[in-house]
Length: 179
Image (cartoon, rainbow, N blue to C red):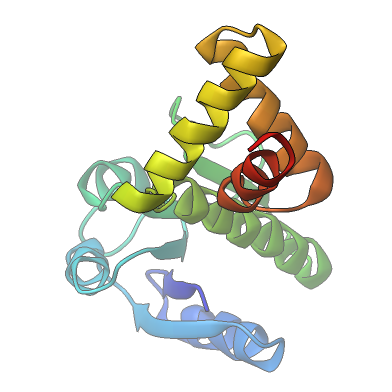
């Protein structure tokens, strides 16, 4: 579940926005008036989205963006022509605020966070025994089919993807057939 921090200079506005988000199934961690409090909250979290107005009680949204951890996105709620930055990581939700549009934008941002998180996760490497099995299968393919090592590796990858099996299972099949 993605962490959301709502920050506006008028706490009543922030609380009513939080109520809308919670009612629609979002996890709002905190409601803030100041940028320093947002930064403090964000530092204690792994990732998330900050929904905020143009200026908070102690800083402008551009200063807040500069001080947020990299794994946080910002959803700026402001009039259409008021944006003064060139940040790619800030998404604008224009005023007057429409709940359906806000929810759709948040859903898109959450999907983006999920993609980034999956990209960061490295695929697990093969154990030494598994790597040996793959190398044996490649050697057999190189010998029997007159392939280069690169061609044999690509062949194993392609057959693995086509069959929906892992590289190890595909290497086992090659060893069974040619071995």
